[in-house]
Length: 209
Image (cartoon, rainbow, N blue to C red; front, side, top):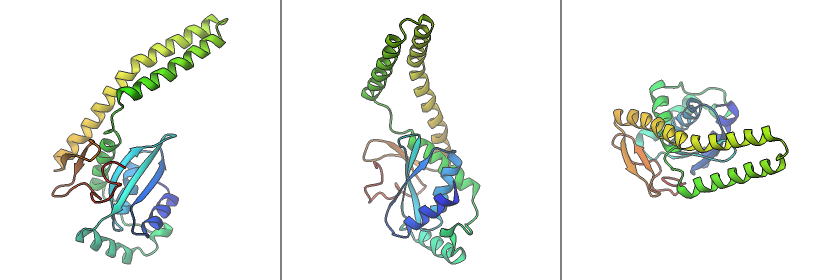
């Protein structure tokens, strides 16, 4: 999380409309801190999805709750230059950890279907075959490409299983904190805060953006 990202986000939030941010790949904690800042100024975390080129797409929406509006008014008065990166509300570790858990689960809640796996396998196989044909006079290179191809096939199910276990760990963390599992409009399993519902549930960004 950089000051530039914070400034960009807060200035877009001034519109009062849902905000979609493309954020370069970085640590979960930094992404959670960015969403935490949004929550201090009248917005709430809605979703995090994997984008292209190793990017994430962060969705935040206006928080209509009385508590959220009161918190925003207090922080705007106390930190009037926040959108310039001058001073920001202090981070709350427990809140950051919960946001991180939600992001991990959300970003992994859209499973790779069989068609996507088949497409990835097809393109990787074609690439490997093309390299082998190009280097067919180099037996060592062809063998290496073959080994890489086999390793790719073996790793696909392993990576999927690891991703499921990783998400399950954070899903358990959310449930322990009182979050409730729900299914959104796109069929993804999400987690809602205690006594709440999916953030921004009345807006198209929620549950399927």
